[in-house]
Length: 353
Image (cartoon, rainbow, N blue to C red; front, side, top):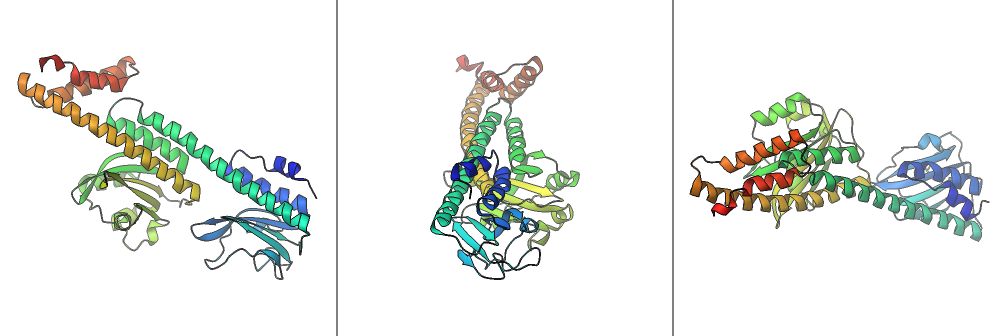
C-alpha cells in the first residue's frame, strides 16, 4: 500500500481534468484494485468523471437519478451494479459531499485502509475546490479587465462576452435589455448563425418567450436548458437554427430586472458542470456592478450634456456625437485611456455652466 505522501504526488494536478485522470490511477496503485471509479454529483445525477483499470469503459457514464453511491463493502455484482467488462466483482465505496470513490475487486478494507481511503478522497475534494476557486479568480481578473478597457459600452460588453465564452465552452453570447415586456438585443459575442441576428433585428421578442419563459419563472434568476431542441416552449425559428444548450441569467438593479445575459451553443451540447454555474453567477455579479456604475456615469454625463446643449447649442445630441468621434479618433491614434477621453469629451464645455 502506497503512503499518503506518494499519493499526494500522484494527484498533484493543475486542472480538474488532470485531477480526475490521476486520482483513479493513484487509488488503484494504493489498494491493488482491479478497477477504480471517481464519481461526481452533476445536475442531480452521479457521473463517472474518472476511471482506471476494468472501470475505464465506464468513464463519462451517468447513473440513474435514483442511484446513490454504495458505501462500505459492496456485494456482487459490484460497485455500479454491473461490471463494464462483464465479470462480477465485489467492491468497496466511500462518499464525501459531491464526490465518491468506488473500488472494484476489493471486498473489504482493514481500519488503516479505511482511514487511508478517507484521507485520499478528502484530499481530492479539497483539491477540486481549490482548483475551482483559482479558475474563478483567474476569470474575475480577466473579465474585469475586459470590462474596464475603455471605449464604448458596446465595445466593452463585447470584449467581456468574448472572455466569458473562452472560460465556459459556449460558442455564442448575447446581452438583452428589457424595454417593457420586450427584450431587445444589445450586443453579441462569439459565433451566431447569420439568421439569428436577422431574426432579432426583424422581430420583437417578448422577455417571457422561448427560454425567457423558464428564466422569469426561476427563483434564482437562472435558467438552464440542456437541449433546446427538446424544450417544449422553444421558438420555432430559433430551434431551426440548431440551438442546443442555453443558459440565461437575469440582470437586476435595485431588485428590478432590466436585462438578460444569454449563452448558447449551436450544434453541440455543453455540459453544465457545478463550477460552470458558479463562474456564471460570478460573471453576472461583475456585469451587474459594472453596468450599474456605467449607467450612473452615463446618466450624469447625459444630464450635463442636455443642459449645455440647451444653453449653447441648437443641435440635439451634439455632445454625444463629439464623444463618439473623440473615441474613434483616440482608437486610431492609440490613446490608452479611451474611457477618460470619452468622459472628457462630454465635459470639455463644462465651464459654460
